[in-house]
Image 1 (cartoon, protein in one colour):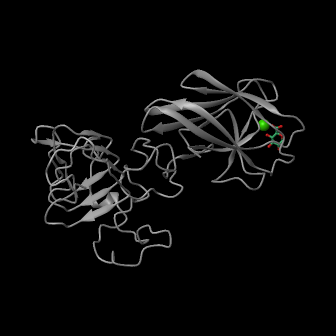
Image 2: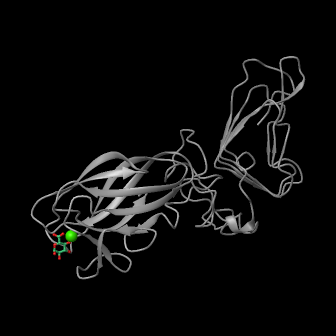
Image 3: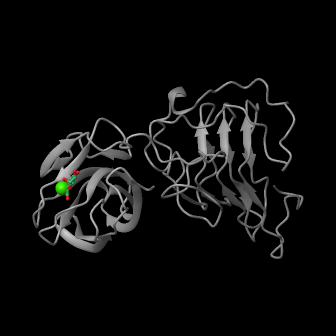
Length: 293
Ligand code: GCU
Ligand code: CA
């Protein structure tokens, strides 16, 4: 990343290293190499290097200083970082207090990486150093203007495709979900073991409990069927506050299920999300709630 011969140059260009992997180097995996300006290091995975990230740069007096903007990176095993004083470092594995272990990854193998790159030039499709489906590093990053899926970027070089983590689908029939009505199975096409048939009454709600890793806007997907002729109206009540009004239109049949998408604010940690009918017709039948659908 350097190239200025350890001399300061105020006009030096900024480089970006992103979606890259370095492993098992005897020296730095990612190295600022006396660069005069802070480069961007976004979404890289450094495994078993010594150190994984060495941010040694140079200041205007020619003195050694940490230079680099680091976001969403993983440093795992080897020695993690050096020359960090002077850098801007946030939302990296070493900043977030996350516990790293092999089980965060599908594989930590370092063989097979010499396979051909994919047609678009990206790294070969290997399970190595990709996050496991249950990884707590999913959606732990911060938006740096690069593409991602889910509520936030993942840490490391590989974004999980369609990465709503398991556990983000909340079936209406499964505690801690609450159904003010009956759990029925008589209309086909539901997921899990049933759906919530709310009583036909104002306030006869379906309620879900969802965990959010960080505070922010979440996209909810509410799967429902409404075989009645008209729409059914409900408030979305998050942690006791009404945050949106939703109209569940007729789907034409009780066995025709659709998913309604709504964005709501969630707080970090546990949230209760209540679908609360505002007329005596009650709710449509509710199958599940997806968070960040
Ligand atoms: C019918 C249907 C139920 C539905 C109810 C309603 O009874 O079988 O599944 O919940 O209508 O109007 O709410
Ligand atoms: Ca009903």
